[in-house]
Image (cartoon, rainbow, N blue to C red; front, side, top):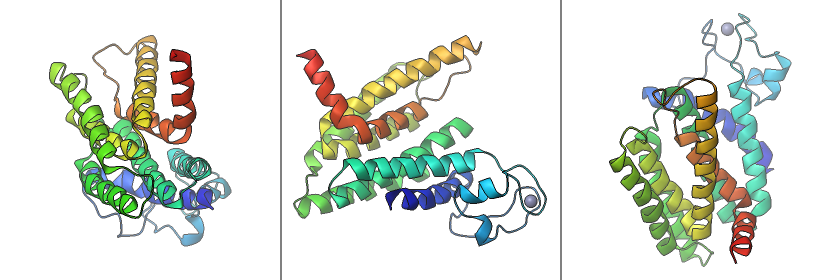
Length: 250
Ligand SMILES: [Zn+2]
């Protein structure tokens, strides 16, 4: 069920990714083919399935549909299914699925445009803070104090790095780490630690890859996707990774 729900949300995320950076509405109008402008029919708007049936082409004009549409849908479906499998509280699972959806949208937009839109991070803060408070009020294992500590610790750490080397990190990265610290801190500060460790690892791999591909330091690669990927890894594998690390360190 979570996988199907994730596919549908992933389809919505492709709209968010296309329109939010341009300041357009995600509700209207309905999606159109970028090639011929034909409104996409409902039967051609089924996540992943339509792409496969149409062989990745518009039904009307035959222009190629970018493969990232089904990939975003698939990634969201997998992230939702994995999150639902790991987290036994339905409320916490839904909260973390929403968090994964935000991470996927931010990662793809940052790859595309090298920005992390305030239009996504700003409303996410009150939304996730309210969801954490509500869950905590109902006695769930969500801690607003840990959320605040996580946001200040992760966001503060990256704020210092961004101030020291403003060319490496943008304020978008700082706002994103604050949000990750908030959402993951609420379920446990060790999840923030895992997210940070995995993000640095991914960021390092991406930097080495860019150097190997001959793109020097000037073509700085965005760090947002590594931060987002680290956060999703923490949601799904954070419990295991944290206990493994603590055992290894002991
Ligand atoms: Zn078309």
